[in-house]
Length: 207
Image (cartoon, rainbow, N blue to C red; front, side):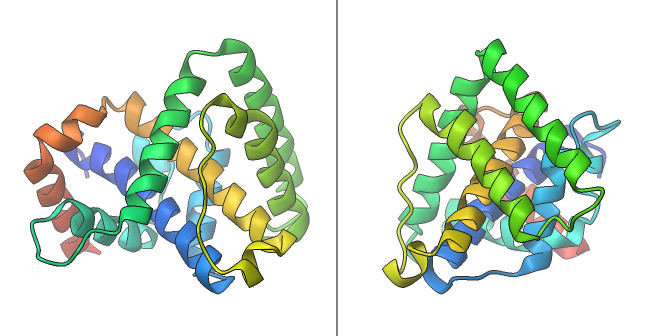
């Protein structure tokens, strides 16, 4: 993976994967842990030497690439409006975040704390997920309209599920940051939709 379109699409696939996993957790109370871990680890990669370093195990983004193709493709299957809403919400929050230096400074400090914690605890441990969720609640969610997550009330009422959802939304914001840093813009999704789909399909064939 070397060309600009490929790495942009990788970052956008990570955003889509975060949305897809949020939906899975909200509806079923759980999700594929390795796919989730892939995104959470990306939060901790704050100074990558190259874009691929944020998500080194490319195969774990399969669900994100598939979601991207399904949402942008011309197939006759109805689009998942819920996923689209989550993606748009994360992109909007990241745009708000990008212009606020003080908030970015606080975010950097909080992520630094998680990095130190991750030296002693697993990323999927309840205490780490709770702290990641706290970063989203305290630093990110108040920047703009809140992302309303739909799902099964039985699960949405559980603190552990709430923590997973917020941690995944934070991971999605991190992917949005990468996408923007690589030159990604919302208008590109509309005007270069075929190129994005082609890049996502090419990535899927290589997995």
